[in-house]
Length: 386
Ligand SMILES: *[C@@H]1O[C@H](CO)[C@@H](O)[C@H](O)[C@H]1NC(C)=O
Ligand SMILES: *[C@@H]1O[C@H](CO)[C@@H](O)[C@H](O)[C@H]1NC(C)=O
Ligand SMILES: *[C@@H]1O[C@H](CO)[C@@H](O)[C@H](O)[C@H]1NC(C)=O
Ligand SMILES: *[C@@H]1O[C@H](CO)[C@@H](O)[C@H](O)[C@H]1NC(C)=O
Ligand SMILES: *[C@@H]1O[C@H](CO)[C@@H](O)[C@H](O)[C@H]1NC(C)=O
Ligand SMILES: *[C@@H]1O[C@H](CO)[C@@H](O)[C@H](O)[C@H]1NC(C)=O
Ligand SMILES: *[C@@H]1O[C@H](CO)[C@@H](O)[C@H](O)[C@H]1NC(C)=O
Ligand SMILES: *[C@@H]1O[C@H](CO)[C@@H](O)[C@H](O)[C@H]1NC(C)=O
Image (tube, rainbow, N blue to C red; front, side):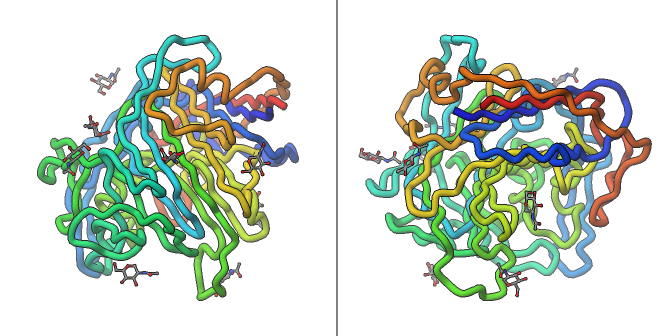
């Protein structure tokens, strides 16, 4: 059992460079990756007004949206995103009561949302995709996905049994709880007017499980941006409800750090069988584009079904794992989960030091409104279990 661990702590007030942990030359194949001490006191900017035309002058709220606590901001509503080549056999979302990995907690996770492709069975979830009205500023709007995952539909559909999607194709999974009307103070904030607006999956202690295939792309590269680069990831649900691919970063809360967690992601075609886990936020880094990527990877199995997921525990730790022992049963108790993410053999690496900078790092034209925004880290240590 190989488990890779990343620890980050938020302390004093200084901005931070991205952490070049790869310089250590470590990139082992692992079955679990953990981000320890996840969650911090910080803030991001909510979108106040969306613009649909080419001028793309979206406005952000000037009062910051503050967050704090265990796993924050990943305790907020998250939507679940998929990119091909990928076939989804099953998905499950669980709410947990009290689970701290490795502490023999007595808690358990109960399944709140579920999809089973072969049985064409689902509970409390909705498939959406970016196939709606096109806007020069915001890109295509979310719509209900048709049964192939990428077409648009007027009503909710279940993903069909053989649901292979191809390079660049994406869809997302949401709960089936409808948002209140669009508005800063409402449950879903401001959102695009022409979408089915649904809740994501909220809560500090939660678990997402997947059963899927990521076969080699069998089509030619048709100018694909992500040719043969499948991924499964989580976004703060406010991002796609405003705009996932806007031409102005003010049109979503992404650049200001409301949260993205990449669970299984192919980063480039040089490493087309390495699935990485990355957090894009301001915890541990001032560079949200790079984020914090674990210096280890999961092996993409091109032939077999893969199983795994991510758990956010009650004391601020997140574990991505790719394990054959994963089952999407209706209840999973803490001890069972502990057995999956087994940490018997543990090797601790020396602490890696971090370069502190005094100014906010600009990245790809995205300039956060305030230097306060970037989090603030003074310590980074790196642990590896083999
Ligand atoms: C933490 O956030 C909650 C809302 O989620 C808020 O009620 C509370 O005041 C915040 N606490 C601090 C110390 O900022
Ligand atoms: C789908 O349901 C069948 C029959 O209950 C079960 O054997 C299979 O494991 C389920 N698949 C997933 C991904 O949960
Ligand atoms: C949401 O899911 C519940 C439970 O599966 C179901 O009873 C309800 O009709 C669904 N609502 C919508 C809007 O799809
Ligand atoms: C997916 O379904 C939509 C309609 O529901 C259709 O227009 C589209 O061609 C389909 N895509 C593929 C790749 O079959
Ligand atoms: C459906 O999912 C939402 C969001 O995760 C949750 O709040 C709600 O309790 C669920 N409803 C049912 C009937 O499971
Ligand atoms: C696929 O095509 C695009 C556009 O021509 C190119 O940028 C990309 O590098 C190609 N990918 C691969 C893996 O060949
Ligand atoms: C591919 O992605 C990995 C992980 O982010 C990175 O270490 C590597 O340098 C990338 N390779 C290329 C050629 O960009
Ligand atoms: C997981 O199961 C697949 C077959 O579905 C097998 O090829 C693979 O070796 C297994 N992985 C491990 C680590 O046992």
